[in-house]
Image 1: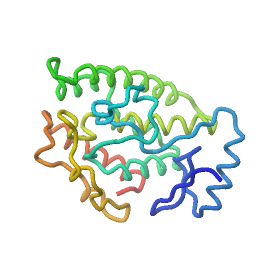
Image 2: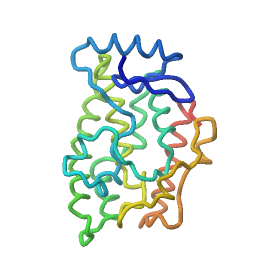
Image 3: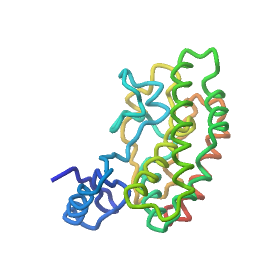
Length: 229
């Protein structure tokens, strides 16, 4: 049996982390079916963040990472994951365009938080390059109609990656990284309102705190369209 994960809302497997199943058996059956399709890949919903790219000590390209240290999120990871699942069910993945900046706007965000003289500038530039490549893929898939199943999963995954790469989506990446207190579990739950789980500590070190707040509010508004609150 392959890798099956459980959330409070259901089960998902590593060939398609963007579909929930009512039982572990159902997830296992679907995993077996998908494994026979051409082009299917193993994926994890916890993808690299801006924190990952700036803080991870491994030398391989962060774009290749699967399960990675994401750092402390400003907006709960589980809310974004569940939102992508529900948007896919409704055929509305393209509506995540409202929370994904263009490459030009992304560069502005990164440059605000990591200016040219910053010690982590080289990694910030790498993030900009990775984001642009992923955005082009997102834009390509968004324009296609009637996506086959494997590409639809890829579309959901690139949306997840782009949202998580936002410099407003994680914090404590400018210095040595987050301490144990910031990284430990904070009682996040899909059974609680997302608005009560937004994490914006005063010590986060953002240059543009208003931008971070606006992003969180836009995410809340977008996810509400899909029944995720």
